[in-house]
Length: 242
Image (cartoon, rainbow, N blue to C red; front, side):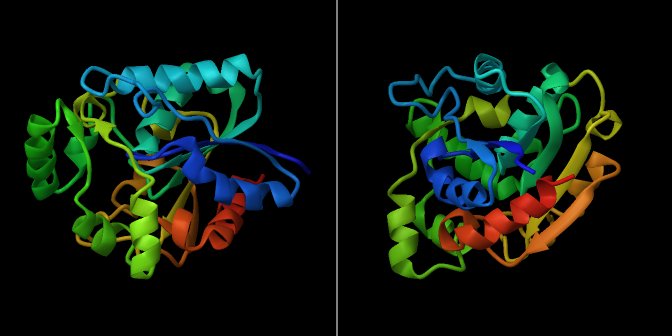
């Protein structure tokens, strides 16, 4: 049975970096959309674009394309976005799929869920870059794409773009806890993901906020999108299916 997926990229990415995984999902007969959200498009003002702008751009994309029964996939920061979309356009969604993604409580921002040393780093980088943040390559290489060789790490890093810092500091507004939403929820955990330290993990620390949810795990780093897209596509299908 053909399903419809919308993949919401994480920080520093665009929809283009999701396309390789999307291609593998399409070969299984599904429809996949990979929009680029407000804030990460060419020419966007990264000093002023906030979390609400990104959420609204995703809601608008789904409405403009008249998509329904959507399996909405969010990677990393994209978990903030899909949580907001579910709060505003639940009638168009079939299931939420969090891929090593943030699961916020009402009033939380992304920075509330990361270690203090990340917040200190982001604060310093944003202060020097007109309120935009970018990861230093050594952190990207060791913590985000630790399952790739150096050449792949370098070529992947070259595709990234500065991210609006407000998207990390803006609190989300949710009418009800995500656990109470009458919709299917899945958490996909890449097991070698050290973008968050395993002492402050993605799963189960954040995943359990979903209430009743399906857990799918696969090997890989935070950026399995680059290092093993075929395996990640398989896991997303497992997480998204009925």
